[in-house]
Length: 305
Length: 270
Image (cartoon, rainbow over all chains, first blue to last red; front, side, top):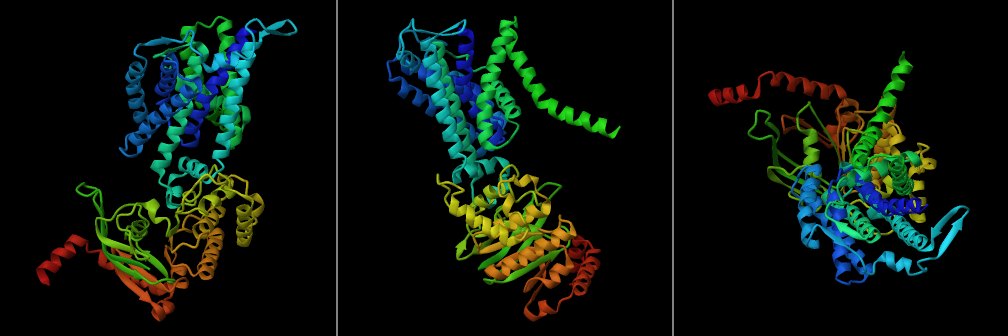
């Protein structure tokens, strides 16, 4: 049961990553690889600030802005300097590796006794308080953490939903959907893309900040493969909600992230070697990208014969 | 309203694919006039519209619109004055967004887009009325994704979007060329209605000789990046599709002499 609650919490935290990737991947149609770097950036900024005794809310907020800065950099490389979007993301991601090492001062930074958002949530219950559901026992502290993070995710998703219905948000969606059209309507697409990438990576960094507070350490390697994780969540979410409507996409990304984390937990429980996890994730995303087309193609061929 | 002074544009300059698309075009358009632009393929008629819209910056010359020198303005900045409809019916709308959302985007053409609701109730009723006035029966489908509509419906909506804020200049780039005849007629009817009702200054590129003869109060014929004929007033009104075809035939004959040969001959004999 603890494993289940743990996976669920991780899924919730990483749904911020999924929401960020949703903005770049689906709304802006921009394959942004900055994510691997910016989630670590969020983690390391939060970790170093917490280790120096900052207020956890403030540390998390600053991690958010650090991510926005990383996204802005990618956006500027891609729009002002006309670098291919994939390459712009790779450049920033690679550069961020050194930045993250500089920020933390070493490759791994444990958070032992520091007060974090997680310890703040846990402070609402005593360490040995338990709730029992039938045969299962759950620590009330764990529940408090889930509730706090779920509250945070819900507010972020609601804010995003509201934003995408404002004039500015509509223009951002149009910039990803048909840039020729929105330019003819007076929007500078490059700026819109940069702003969107800033927002996207800010959310990713927020996920990183929560992740280090939850797992109790920051590691310079923690971001590897995270962007694929985000793609997987977004894709699962889309098939769960079966719609491209923006509100449903947001809900789908959160659900996709949680479901994917739970699936991984089950697979690991059944004996999947953790070392194979990234390969399996990559294969999964490959399948999810290729299968719908292949199935449609097959159907067509069956229909014609 | 619009003053174009001797603009020129060469694409892929210095490569084997060099195209001298505009070779010194000057044009002055009065407010409220409806100018038809015709020409052979590659004559530079669409390039002329794109130069005004800012899809690229011209190599030489000046463009002045409504008292502003816009020669070096980027496309998005010119959008505050200009409404556009493209040849491709899919170019003018955002397919995954709804009809209402697309219209709301057009309702802010060239203006600041802040954090106000894009589809407040007053905006929604206003858009509903505008769509109903088109008479296409789309007013009850405002929340449908625009990508699910036909090319004709999308082009009609693009036209409505371009005219929503009464642009100072309306640019129509062969906007019926990709449509079936019935949809094309419908879009032309809507175009005429809108231009007459709002007294819009318009430049319209077309391939259709009946459209060129029947619409507009001025006609410009372009050949090889230059304006060859400019018919205005009564002269324009007298033009029939056959006259235009005859003009094209003249051009075709003269083009048999390729341009460099013509240059060489004129140097030697003139």
